[in-house]
Length: 343
Image 1 (cartoon, rainbow, N blue to C red):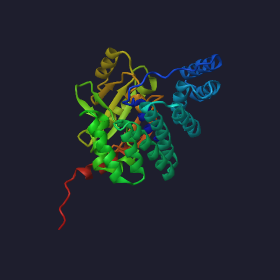
Image 2: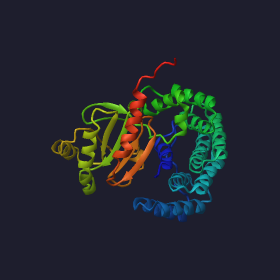
Image 3: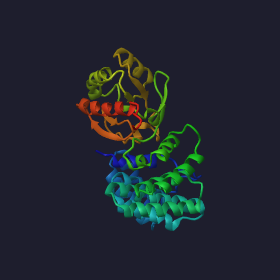
Image 4: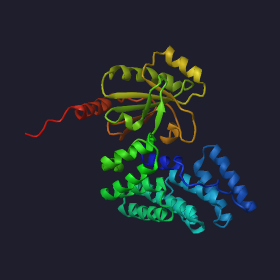
């Protein structure tokens, strides 16, 4: 299970609203070589080695390489190297100049502490995260991502009134229809969800023309299936997904298959030829793609999400999940049933 990575990935992919230029690379020649080597390690999907090289480049640049620090935070979070990520964020604070830079730097420190708190379940870390988001918002009051993150830190501390106030401010700053705004609205009415392992918010247009978001599906169990036509194990697992879609037809369960295919026509033809009658979406593969939000590195990869939007199970490869789905669907039916008034 890698649920603890999902909050990390959401905040990495959610671009802060403050205007900012791409961070400059290292100045010294030695640091530039290390930074270039780090980028090559990233291309080879060796994030652990890349992190070491980014650390080396930053040290060679006397702790002034903003691009190195951002990468140290990104991969430190992903690999749960909390000390490395925190040290880089604190370097950003020390070097920050101007309100926006100060706000972003304290935001980065807060994100590290918020995620470490989720990983270690420590109130002390969430309290420190709240302090950092407070400093961020003191430097730049209308910073939506800091408001959202601070609301989550306060929710973890069971300070629901304060969390609700931050979520309400966030909602006021975001346009109607954005998935993150929909999620914040749910947190306002159900603050306990801000403490749960929620599936990342997203909105898509499916192959059959439906516009849906993760939070539109509240009340239904969701089986999220990542696959591609070129993936042999995915093709082998496809009859199992078809069987699940058929077995649970008419029940509060949605099957959504997210394809990583680059060839749109081939994808459409495969779906039609194989009678795949459930919901489909082809991921564009951008930084904010669903696959990136969910940290998908291998396929087939499925996520089971309950009627509240909370992640329940995650499997790489084909897996027997019908028993879990039956239980979740039964609970979803209970939530659908009208409540009897007290006698």
